[in-house]
Length: 227
Ligand code: DHB
Ligand code: MG
Image (cartoon, rainbow, N blue to C red; front, top):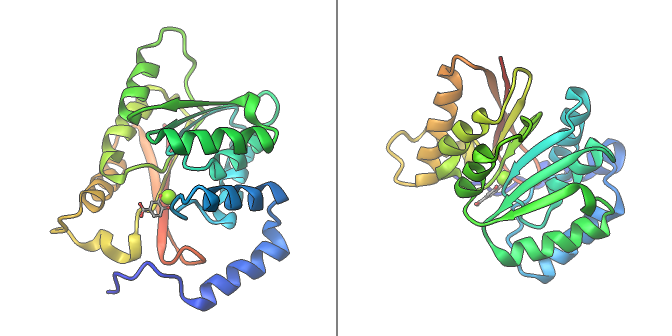
């Protein structure tokens, strides 16, 4: 087993080829990359191919109300907000004020600022507040992509704001194969292992996980639908 997350150069080249051939990200995504780099943010956003997959999942499921945990510079947020359309609403949770500030600019520049609310602070607190707010409609689609150690907790909170048909996607569930290490001392790995087991055992979820390679290395995502 390799613990290497680094992309094989051929994986990255194929992603580049696919970006130019079928994914076709708009220029706004290049601007987001540049803004994130200028702000010295970590380059851990989803690849363009995965961003487009999120967009397609929004379109296929007809999602209008979207919850994201982990905004970063707003890259995946823009993909989903565009797909949700003018009447869509994205609520996205971010811990770092600096990241939220960069994301706000990126969202506004991409023309989707009006349909995105950024909740600043620890995501578990923001999610609990959403749960406790009377009258909130359930979410149609949830993307979990923040600190992986808390994913079991985020999943439970997301389920409290779900309905039959809600789609729940989790990023980075393979991490170069590290997910196999039951004795890992990395809280993120233990979080992802519990996150996957919870989904497999949950009476309200029908779920799978798919391994991926590409510009972001060897990783994977989980996808579930609420029964
Ligand atoms: C990391 C986090 C991510 O969400 C990701 O997609 C890749 C890497 C990280 O924390 O290292
Ligand atoms: Mg991620």
